[in-house]
Image (cartoon, rainbow, N blue to C red; front, side, top):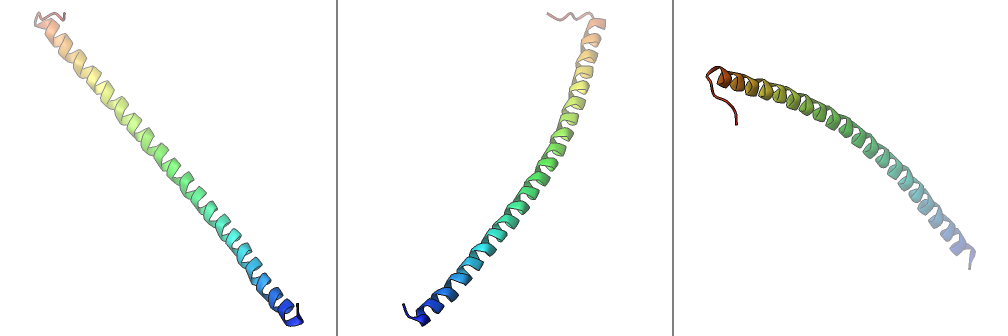
Length: 82
């Protein structure tokens, strides 16, 4: 190989290495951002689930109260459940 080819080869290898390094850094940055987003979304989902569970519990209590009220009204009227 001539000296020009060797120098040309050296200058070609360096940018390729730097590009790979930058790409790895970008990938790590992207992965970190994705992880942070997923963590945030997970917390938001947990909050939504908690609110839904509270609503379900509230509706269940209301349903039970209403069912008991209907049951006792029926007893007062002389209607007996089967």
